[in-house]
Length: 394
Image (cartoon, rainbow, N blue to C red):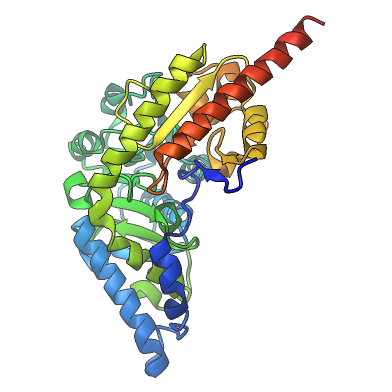
């Protein structure tokens, strides 16, 4: 077993950056409530304001359009429920009824589960198909868009396959019908360079812990004049848009990492070289391996493998025992005996989905890490396949 575990599950969460770890003792001194008006509140209030300003500058939006919350799951719930409650039948805002949603079939559960809940409330959800090559069906969107469409929600990049979706094209289609667009940008933030002004979306969601900052902190972008109804009622925090004392420590660590966003293009290029090397070597050294959505535009750090003849959960546990942290799919679904809904939605069979392994790299991943992992993965797959073959001959 390795003395130091090798972490290859950055899409689930990223470890705290060394910069954040070093700054934590000082940040822990910012314990005051930013809503107070005395001395203890001034530092936290400054962190809140400055982090929001830096984020707004990077994303090229107004700081007044940024709302801090607990994470993207809260943000995703807020967006879908805000739009539904604004346009639902019998709404109290005098708005024309818009009860249809267009949502990709491979969204994070915080979107799909919320959409399924809205269906019980009377919403009509059209699930946008995604092909085995990772292509989103834009013609489906064209066909389904109409005057009763309230929202299109498509993630920037998929957390399991890494597929990057054409958000700007989706926005262009939606705007022909005056339809709102939301994008879950959790996996893209800190992995590839983008800004929300260029994308043209009305809503976007981000989680700090995917980018080397603390968990429990999220960002919701809601464009000025886009429908917005509080999910969390309470005090007047976040300009009365999200009740609850702000998570200043989490926000401060996110602010530390926003300063590092200039490194994204260089890091993205370096990580892509490692990922491509990994995939080339695995396909050369292990028979019957395929890369899911390999032909699509993908995040540079993500590789979703289907390894024939090997159960993904068994493979994951075997690798964990050897000191390698990887995943079979989304971390929020770990422990679920059912195959990944995302992998089924792109067209994999149940067996293929159960034979899947997700490897996601990060800023601290090295060539040595990849070489050690390739060596162990080859050995473990050979071992498990030999066991399976022996059992089948009994």
